[in-house]
Length: 196
Length: 173
Image (cartoon, rainbow over all chains, first blue to last red; front, top):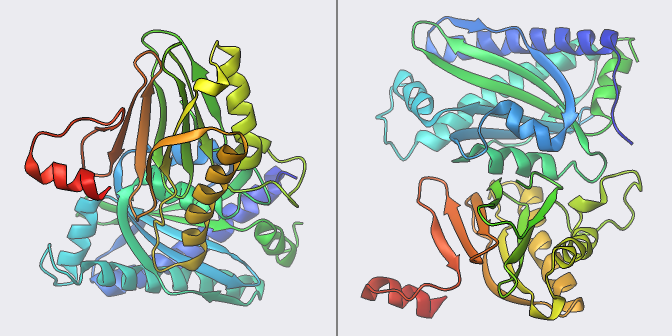
């Protein structure tokens, strides 16, 4: 069974992503003490094989911060940023660039930003969500994304990506923020906002 | 190119089979070097049992391996001559339980299907926490692996190492 959504549903999901990312950007802005710009979120339903390519060259080195989501909206939150931008964020937090604490500082950023996004969704839909602790890794983009997708390949060949960009103003530094609902997760969201 | 759940095979000079950025997935290479043909499958999950029948069967080890054998055989490969090479099956997020399981289980499932098909594994670079890219030249049968931040390294056929440092590594492996 492959997930299919009509235009109204995709618009509704895009709006949810927009509100979630708006709340997330406020949290990030408070942590970094910088203004954060938001790009218009993208919502796509596509074959998993193409999802990796949509995000960038599979061999590109990237830092990923992953949060599992449990409860009534099971899925994964994945934040992707270039290693250079990860370094910039650490510097903004007052850490030396090659600090041993960098992965846990990034994990904490991911935790706060991801949790704000999820709380915004939870607030709008009345769904109970529970994020799991963050994991941070720097590796090939393809390897990170396919490992997140592989877990949900058991129920579908396609995946839904809610994709937002958070841009730190004046720093040429951006974070791609992805919500990848498990199969059924998006249906639950749509049902709660009345466009199922 | 083999993306998630895809496979490819070739015996054409100049071709290169590749699976980019393998994480928990397995890149399985089958070679018949005398004939100069090779196949590469990008396997996502261990077994199709109990899963929806409408799903792409080639992402599962138990369905992808027989199809890969069929495609390499169709290009002139002879099954008794097949050499298998396994790459991938990493645990990218060591602290997150579920993805860890998938990589290890994928490698185990592929080994099991190959044993059933009586195909020997001649080289393997699996597990760990690093993503990998695998490339195969069907004519020469040379298989190279690249990890994030490093260069292509030849995995098969085994390269005689010159420095004493790498000789030690080879003995351990």
